[in-house]
Length: 80
Image 1 (spheres, rainbow, N blue to C red):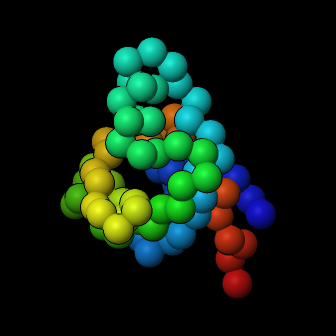
Image 2: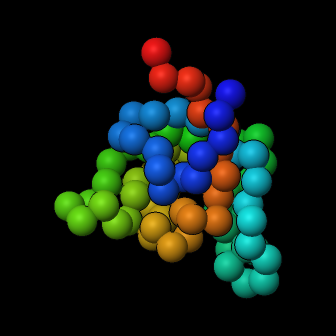
């Protein structure tokens, strides 16, 4: 399955986080929100200028700015 950046995902596209490629305070904050490798996510919405992005994670909704989403690598289903 292809791996892409979370920012590149389309609305209603599902995937599984494979890596969080940032350390320090931002990496810790992302991981504390539950965005860790193995977590399934779905992109639900984007703001009018595509920032921020709303994600469905573990039954809840979470929003991320694109500059935060850039550090998250996701494995997605191939397009059919």
